Image (cartoon, rainbow, N blue to C red; front, side, top):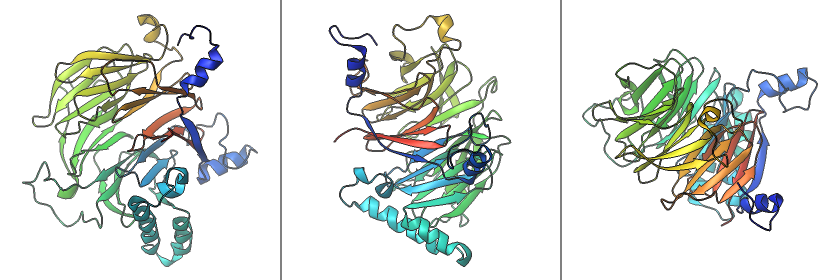
Length: 413
């Protein structure tokens, strides 16, 4: 961005921080990192430079109520934290969700066998439990049961899927399987099998129906009904078939639409009543890396390797805004190739849009109005950031990095 007259670049960068500051950084203690670090004679907990195994994936997510946070570094382990323990600076006063998370973790410890009870209890006391999935983890998503009627209410519900609580965690694996964990017990509630390659994206419908959509590198997108014993009841297939793998999927807030994006320049808007593509959104100049709906479901935001985020009106399919990560915007030829400003990912919550970019910055925009303005915050982050997640209250942002660590940023109250 251009400097303001009479100010240095350093002054502008400081101003662009917008009050956003890092409040915590944690490294993975997964054995994969300790093993590689020891072999390379490096500090324990720090992955060796250039090592590939375990670096490819970093995925993270907050639970819908904000009480839990889960992350994985590409090994078989998913770590689940109580947010009140993980980020105490955000929990100055005891909250019902914090108490629920703490008791949940304690309950997990009690459900384990005697052989692991002591270790689990110690983990629970520290506000963290590790879930072993047996394969490398490639995607995670929380789902919450609501009070509304299921979209497939005419289908019978069976007893094999019988959770103790209303919160589950779906874990996508490198081999294509999906494990669904009951967050009330820390036990696997369902094993979903149909994909033949690594899961690239998972997301639950926001209507509380426990309907899950999954995308995988095998060029398939499946819909699963968890209350119907995890029945895979439909696969989304474009008219001409999938040409490229899907990177990410997103549900509309009302559960009536799904968007799929991936390798290629097009985002597809699907109508779930007919399972057909109703809009083919074309405007990016490079592969599309992420997608998120606005809180009211009227707008869609897509990120791309072409250095920008595009905002779409889903009713008309028209572009209503562009959020640039290079100033001035690059030429079409430059945007279509390697440009060092590729937008790796995005997240949207209420009035804010956050992005991570290969230029090493986290940017946050105010999207409460239709006018596209400059970011309200821009903060330098780790150059190997690969995933981000907004907390439900849109105050905090988690950044997952290839080197096996997390950074948490927060706005002041």
